Image (cartoon, rainbow, N blue to C red; front, side, top):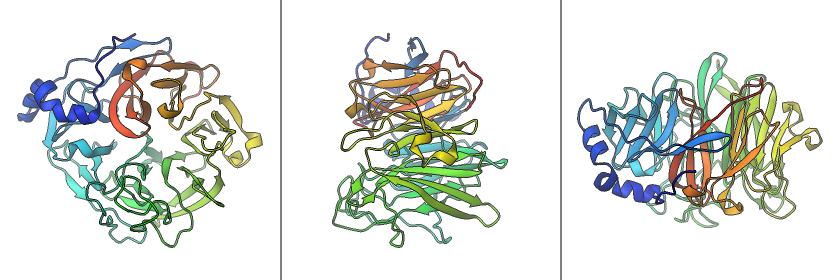
Length: 433
C-alpha cells in the first residue's frame, strides 16, 4: 500500500501551489515554450488495479487519449504526454473555481468556472467565453445571483463521460449537477455538435420550489425562481446523461428528493434530429428516492443498459449495480442485480470489460471506497483506499492512452478536493464498453 501522505484539499493546494509546491512547475510553465514536469506520482497496487495520486503542483481536471487539461492557482495547462509535462499554459484568474472541463476530439478544450463557460481552440494560446443558446435559439443568460459568491454551478458535471460518436460525428452532451453548493442554479441538459464552438440547451427543467436563489449554497423556498416556468418536471440536479447507439437515443437520470406526490428522480429518453437541430424528450419513469431509479453511472454495452443505485431516503433501500434490456428499464422484474455494495453509489464507468464504481463517503463504512469488476460483472471486489482520507470518487474519465482512468475525489460527496488515477490490471471477457 501507499505510504500515507498528508491530505491536501484542492482549496489548500491551490492557495499554496505557487509558494510551496509549484516553484519548478509554475516558473517553468510561465515561460514561453516551457516543458515543465511535475515529479511522477507514487504508484500503489491492489489485486485488481494500480493507482496513484494527482501529480505534484497540478490538479488534472480532464483527459483524452494522450492529452490532459489541468490547473494550478491562476493558470490552466495542457499536457500532451498523459500529465507528465505541461508545455501549454495561459493565465486564468478563476482557475480555483473550475468544476468542469472537456477535451474534444479535434483538440478544443471547453471548461467552466463559476457560472461562465470558456473555449480554447488553439492549445491554450487563447480562450474565449461562450454564450449558451437557449432552446429557441436566443442567448441563454445566467441569472443575477443574490450572493455573488454563489452564482450557481451552471456547468458542473458529476459524470466524466460526456462525448459520444453519434452517427459518425462527435456530440458533447451533459447535465449540471447543482443546487448543493455554489449557489442555486437552473437545471439543464447542454449539448454541442461543433466541437464546443456552439453550446445549446437540449432540455430545461422546471422551477423547483425548493431551489430558489436565496443566496445560499443550494437555495431554498424564497428568493429568485430558477428554471423553465412552463415545464412541470422538476429535479434538484442531473446525475448523468449518456447515449445508446443501438437506439440512437439519449438517456438522462436526475435526483434527488420526494416532494409530496412529486418526485425529483426521473429517467428521461431523448432523440435528436440533426437536420432540424431539434430534440424530443420524454420522462419514462419517475420514482422515490429510495428506489433503484435514483442512480447514476448509466452505461450502454452490447445492447444492454447498466447503472448503479444511489438509493437513500426512507428504508428499505433498493441498491446495487443493475442491468437490463433498454426496453425493460421501466420493468424492475426484468432487471438483473449484478452486485450490491449496500451503500449509496452514484458514479460508474464501463470500458474494455472493466466496471469501476465508487462509494458515497458520507453513507459508506469505507473512507475512499471503490467497486471493481474486471469481467463485466461476473466477479466483484471492493477496496478502501484509506490513505486518501474520507472521499467520494466521481467524474470517472475514460482511460488515457496509457490505460489510466482519471477520477475526482470529493470531500463529503461533492466538494472539490483532490483527484487520482486508476489502471486496471487486466480486463477479461469479450464485452467492451
